[in-house]
Length: 462
Ligand code: TRP
Image (cartoon, rainbow, N blue to C red; front, side, top):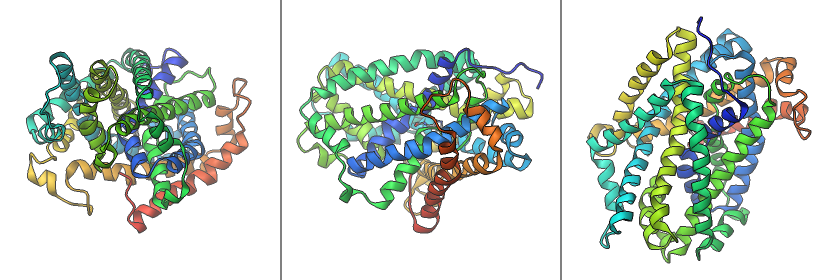
């Protein structure tokens, strides 16, 4: 405990790292898919409302708990609220553990597709290729799955090993700008395509007849995942901030960046899909289908400059995933550093290795090992990967989020929170009273609705 606590070198570094945590597979893989399934328009509007009304206030809550205590979630919640609240922090550490174990598997696929598309770009796209078959062969090859997710996990461990400013902040400062640049290139290319008009129409024209109640809850559930809320990742990142810039501004920038990136990614993917006749009907109903089955070939068939943009796109996915996995691992590692007085290198290697054991189980749960692939703990969720995703999105994050909002809104004093949110740098539009109302009433009610839907009405947000 005597070690000097690591800190971000500047507010820009912190904002980029936190935006990097938020921007990830949730934006590129999950959001387009659920937008598709929920018929766009009205769903997107509801999603934006959830982000502004629930996501943003909780983002501020987590950051302020972290910054005011300068501790990782277990210690932070104990100090800010009370000893028993350490359990909420521990719950978050477990959530980080389980999300990271399956997230690295999907991240590993992006590495595979990077290499694959690079090969196609250099040697030509084979005429007879079956992208569905390629994907099936990736996931059913156990050793390759382990290799891909292993490489990715090594990247995560290596970054966290070098610490908050030496690893996480450095990587984020490089990756985030590159990621924005690639995404803008893709966006320009997509907007010139024939399907762009229809895509924009689908995404931004609300048609409330098409929105089902579960769509609303799905939007809400996803706002936790995409903003990295509900498990203390933002408490952890907040605990490395120096007290100089307004938390309200930083939180807002992070949330806006995450939202813009999710929308850009969706515009890009849908423009491509709507350009190909018959494609909209074909987009398979599996989450991975769009990103890893439909898109790879379309880069070579319809996307202007697709030979260049294809590999760049999968690098983008990998980079976005890495800046998220490092935040997940950091939550676990910071627990061992702060609460168990472990030195960072040891904490990183030990937790990285332990999580990788679970990653291997998730990687093998696509057919390679039959009991891992077929057990059904939850009806309709087959195998280890799907089960982990199910528990994380439906229980771990909403339960964590519920306690964080209630703790921050009802158990912390007004002074404790006001001192963090209101200072001479706070932007003029911010009203502490409005925030407090949202964190005490709106956010807990919304999150409780998710849990009630999951527990009593069989809803599923994974
Ligand atoms: N937000 C990331 C994404 O959208 C995933 C993620 C990173 C996350 N850290 C988290 C989700 C912490 C929940 C909690 O891909």
